[in-house]
Length: 297
Ligand SMILES: [Zn+2]
Image (tube, rainbow, N blue to C red; front, side, top):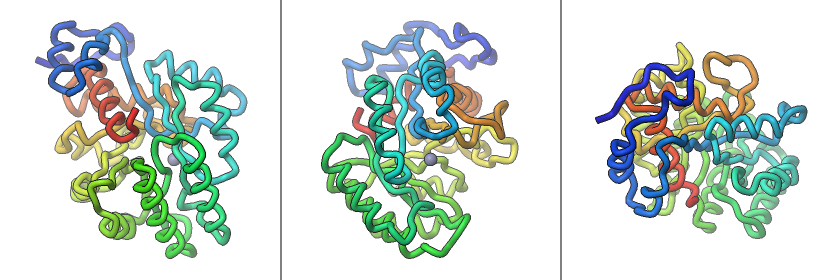
């Protein structure tokens, strides 16, 4: 029933039989209204993790956002890292109310001596503004283990904030799978859900993350020759996958090593289309539906 497109250079190659699409869409969503609104000629991609406020985009931010929209990336979810970017995030949301959606949280590599003040800032923002997840939060022991205990405390505290506000979480985990899973086990509950952003673990860790209520955020690493996750992704049900760029970092092939941007979500979708033997439009529709389960929009 599914066609595998081998030619992705032209956006027209994403089109496929209308009836096939509708049948497919009816199987993949329980929401009738959304089913009938899906347009086969339109890609609907969601970048679930993009640092649009980064200084890397100060010169050409609007062009970059427009390129993403043109590529079918209509929804861009923006994680917070610390309080210094909060006002810039609000300005972006105001400028692109249809396309930009904010998360709030303290990034683990920004957990330092003043982390309690930063957590208080996070808490104030969550109480006074609309956010779609708590993130990015988690643990990062790649650079520095000095604040390991504080990182773990900040992670757990922010999970509890997410539960209080009935939000999902967006997890950053680098060289810290055991420590992150330890906290997730403590907080395991029906109201614990979210995205394991930039997932780089193995199949066992992927299954463990899913069993703890997480979807896997898949980005440029899936296109890397030594990225490893492309080796087992086909064993993970697509319902557990969302797309992301983590721009300006981790650009997918053929832009590896250069600045990443949200329009490259399309390149990640193309890679998943190869892995799963589906069209890019199907990958886009399914992963966007998955993202709605986490963000509530
Ligand atoms: Zn990030």
